[in-house]
Length: 183
Image 1: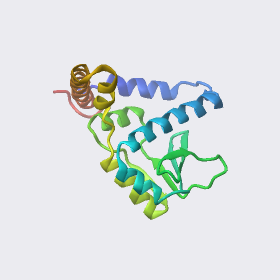
Image 2 (image 1 turned 180 degrees about the vertical axis):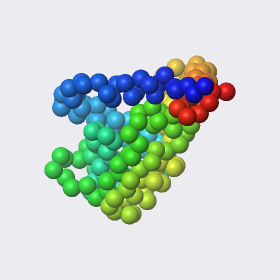
Image 3 (image 1 turned 45 degrees about the vertical axis):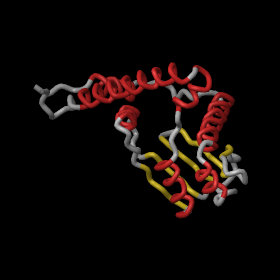
Image 4 (image 1 turned 30 degrees about the vertical axis):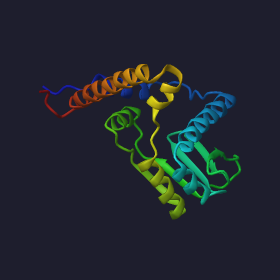
């Protein structure tokens, strides 16, 4: 008997609804993007090599797109990132080609990068690739500054266990796709 994942059914149902194209207000998008830039810079500042690599790309503009969402980043003279101006022409365009949020979440939980179409400056693309391969947010270290070492480590282990459990659940749920038999 072929069984479809309830998450895929829900995603398909939501895509077929005749909902108006609801967009958040521009100020909310701008504020969310500012928070993402702050987080990215926080992570970059923990890795001097990452900042040195971005410094070599100062003034370059990166456009990241997925579905109707887009995000323009500017490499600053400090080796960090800032939001680029709307009229700035991107030197590199990275478009996430996977349309399904469900599939993106599955890949993220498996620790995989999403499929991306890249157009533009090759050197900037190489630096962005290096950053994605080598820079990681040490959330446990940040939590330790606030909570102390032991609570931060315990919370980190709990998050890792939750992540593993979610990954297993999603893997099993993905096995229930049309055309495949359930096990």
